[in-house]
Length: 313
Ligand SMILES: [Zn+2]
Image 1 (cartoon, rainbow, N blue to C red):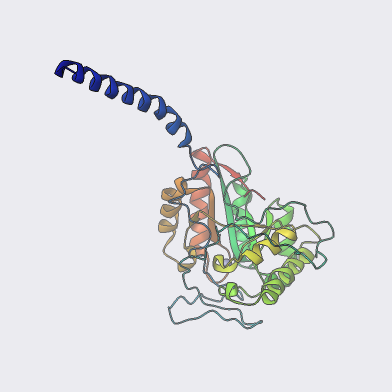
Image 2 (cartoon, protein in one colour):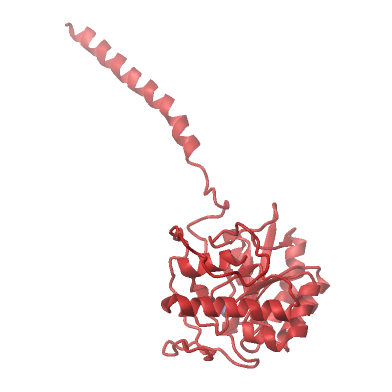
């Protein structure tokens, strides 16, 4: 073989390799699609297990958030701790749970086929936010929030503490009558309930569901949000089997820490790219900052073209 022939052969081999590569590239690109789940950015999505952490409790109760304040676990202890939760793996796919549910459902006609996966996205297509408001109902703050929602024709999902709903049935009915949706936020707001036995989780979830639905006059609770995002595969399956979609969030306003209305507003505005579900609180203490922030955010969101939707149930 002459040196020229050898060079030509190498050239042919290199050219053929390049052609093969070029043919392969479009296929690779086509497979690099976005997160099929929701189109949100997985890296920035707050899965609903971060620092919802807020405690509920009696009206006027202020939230303790010192690190040494541990959540109360005993039934009847309203667990005033608001420790942050670094994460609970709530996005882990639920293992198949054969044989569950075994007990008769609380609701006479629970919706079939409710997913046990944590919901973050809106049920509406297009540009929308899901306002979610936790730890009420509260006789002082819930009516103020309702007034604002009505003023701006906005919808929200209220994650209620069972005993508070039982104590405020008229307020629960007012929430329902205004077209908002209900969410079960447990009996005792124990942010460590993921560490407790299944029987305890079951009691916390199903007792609260009954209290809220009774207070509402029979309107179904559509979601379950674990206190502080303390979901477990069991609690998600249980909630789903009783017609309640596990509910997470994308934007944690941390309004319960009372950072100032401006800070709450800024957190929402900067967080909107992370997803549509926003976490506020209407219970557990002085929520005047939350009310002030909503008073500015609701008209701003409308001006920006956002619709007010609900989380996918
Ligand atoms: Zn809460």
